[in-house]
Image (cartoon, rainbow, N blue to C red; front, side, top):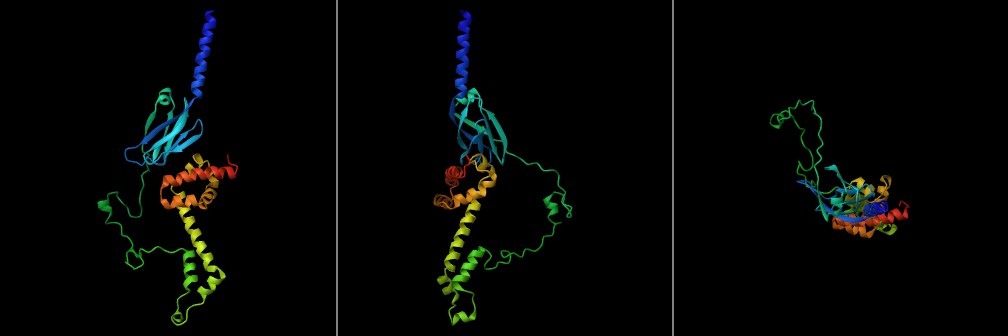
Length: 265
């Protein structure tokens, strides 16, 4: 009788452990740092392969189970791994301090200037070439943006090349270009170039690892995915708002559609 009772007790204990281990919860927390930005830290549950990124204040929410392992990583922080223990699983909020990553370089010898490393001594040893930039010469166009090739072609198609004869006789090229549709084509090309430049700038906001781990976009498909986003009006509106969190939310939604249309899930 005692053996049967003991067997029942052990059975219910094991069942309770398995049930608890299978439960999931949404763990909320915040990444902290003394003097570094805490936005964009990747929080990955390497057990379930889920991942999220922190917001401007370092906050995150991710689903966990007992005995899962969370990994926190960013370019400017040391990689940190935290197991989901019983205490962590039962807590309502967790704070994760991150340690700054310092890339220690080996000793570097600078030649041919024979520098000592003391700026007060080395500043007189180095002779710099004279700066002949537009800013240094204080030219009128020093701070003007350099137009792209498409913008220059559009200007030429619209106004024509300047010559003294234009004063007496208006050029025919702008009229011909308008009739043949060349001007309209060049305007569209300028618009496309602008959209492409914006897309490239947005892609630079986020590390490639975020595309792979969070958006689940293969490395060789990132450029194609960005073009997929570029033609979407919601993405363009988010880019114009310059709100990186809004841009990221749009990219998360677009990643689901991209993976579905390309059978990546």
